[in-house]
Amino acid sequence: MKNSLLESTSFHTRHAWFNIREQFSDIPTALASNALIPFFVWILSRVWERFNSHQANFTLNEIIIYIAITELLFMTFVRLPSLNRASGDFSLSLARPRSWLMTSFSGFFGRSLGGRIFMLIILTFTIPLLGAKAGDIFTASLRLFILLPWLGIIQGLFSLFFANAQVLWHQTNYFLLPFGKIFLVLGGVWGPIADFSEPWRSFVLKLPPSDIFFQPAYFCIKGHFYQTTPTEWVLRTGVLVISLVVINIIFFRVAKERHQAFGG
Amino acid sequence: MSYSLSAKNIVKTFGKDFLAVRDLSFDLKAGESVAFLGPNGAGKSTTIKILCGILSPNSGEAYIKGHKAGTLEANKSLGLVFGTRSQLYMHMTVLQCLSLIGEIYYLTGQAKHNRINELTELFEIGDLLQKRVRTLSLGQRMRCEVVAALIHKPQVLLADEPTIGLDIIAKNRLRELIQRWQKEEKSTLLLTSHDLSDVEVLCNRCILIDHGVKKFDGPLASLKGSLSDLRRIQITVSDHTTPSFVTDKKTIVPLHNDEFTHRYELKTSVIPMSDALSELSKHYGDKLQDIQISEVSLEEVLAFRYKDRTGNEKFSS
Image (cartoon, rainbow over all chains, first blue to last red):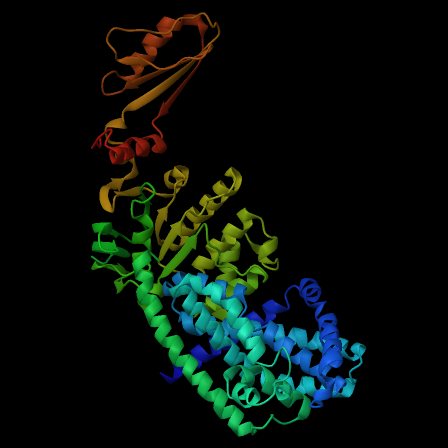
C-alpha cells in the first residue's frame, strides 16, 4: 500500500514535470503568444491611474505589479485546450492502468505551473520597462513563486471539475466564459477588491475567487494578506481544496457511469 | 485452456431498446492474428471498447489474459493503437513521449530504456526519437504510435484502423513491422480495419459481425465461402475486332469488355482451370497477348456478405 502510494506520487510528479516542460517546448511560439501581455498591463495600469488612483490602496508602481500578477493568474486559469485534452483522454484512460482523475490533475497542475513560471519570467523582465521598480517586482515575483504550487493545486482542481463536467455534459463548455468573467470580477482582476466600496468589499472578500486571485496578488505586493492572516487564508483555501476533491470524485463516478450510456 | 482474449456472451444495449451487441462470444489464442470485421454500425467499436474496459457489458464478460476487462491487470496486458486518435504529445519529442507512456504502464529505469531501445530497433525509429511529434509525417507518427502501444510489452494488441490515411508505402512498411513484432514477441493481435489489404497481410482468422451478432468466425480463406472457387480471367488481345468467347454451357461467363480486354468469370468446381484456359487459347489463337487470373478480393466477399443487411441477398455460407 505504502509502496504503491509512493510509486503513484512519484509518477504523478514526473507527469506534472512532463507537462511543465511541455510549456517550454516551443519557446518562440510561447514568447509570441505572451508578447502583448506587458503592453496589456501597461494599458490597464494607465486606465487605473486615470480613474482610480484616488483610492490610495495602491501606488502606480504597485498597481502595475498587481495587474501583472492577477493577469498572470487569470490567464492561466481553467483553459479550454487543457480541458479538451483531459476530457478527450477520458475513454482511453479507462483502458490504462492509471487513474484519469489523478493523471488529469497532475497534467493540469504541471501545465498551469509551467505556463505561470513562463509568464512570470517574461513579466519580471518586462514590467520594469513600464515604470515599476525592479526591486519590488523581484520581491513580488519571489513571493508569487512560493505561492504558485498551492495556487496550482487549486487551479488544477477547478480545471478537473470542468473536465469532469465536460465529460458529463459537453454543453458546460458554454459556461466557461461566464464562469471566467465572474471570477474576473469577484477575484479582483478587474480592479483590486480593496478598492471596492462596502458592503460589497466584505462580501466579495469571503468568496473563493478573492482567495485565488486578489489575496495572492495583494500578498506578493504588500507582504501580507488583506484583512486576513496567512493561517486563515491557508484554512479557507484548504477547505476549498477539500470541497473540490470531494466534488471531483463524485462527478468522476457519475461521469464513468453516464459514459456507459452513449457508447464511450 | 487459457485464452489471451475472451468474450463470453456479451450483450450491450444503449438506451432502452438499442441492442448494439447480442450474445457475442469468441476466444483468441496466444499469438493469433484475428481480423474483427463488420460494416459501419455493426457493433465492432462497442465490442472493442468492452474488451478494453472502456464500456461494461449489460451481461456477459470479457477477459484479457484471464483478467476481467477493465481491471488493472487486464489493462497492463493490453496495448491499444487507434489510427484516428494519437497517444503522443504533439509538442514533445518521441523519446519523451515513449518514456512517459512507459511510466503510465509502470515501466521505469533500465527496463524502460532497454524496452525503448528494443522497439526503436525493431520499428526503425532511431532517427525520430529526438524529433518533436508535430514535425513527423503521418507514416512516421503511426510507427511511433505503435511503439507507444507496445512499450509495456502487452500480450494483446487491439489495433483499430492502424493504417488509416497512410500512403501505400507507409502502409506496407507498418504492416511489415507489425508482422515482425508479432513474430518476435508472439503476442495476440485483434485488428479492425476497413482496409482489407491490412487484414489479408496481417491476419489468418476473421470474425465478422453484423447488427451485433457474430456472422462468421474462421480462417480468412473460408470467409469466401461459395465464392472461394470463383476466378476471373482477363485476356488482352492484339486485335480489337476479335470476338468474345461464347459457349452454350455457361461454364465460362463473359463479363464486360473493353476494346483490347475481354473478361470472364468461372467456377473451378464447374470447369477446371486447365480446361478453361485451353478453350480460351483455342478461341483466341495468335491474337491472345496476355492472360491474368485473379481470385475474388476480400472487399468483394465482404460486400457480398454485407448485402444481407439490406435484404437483397442472403449469406452464401
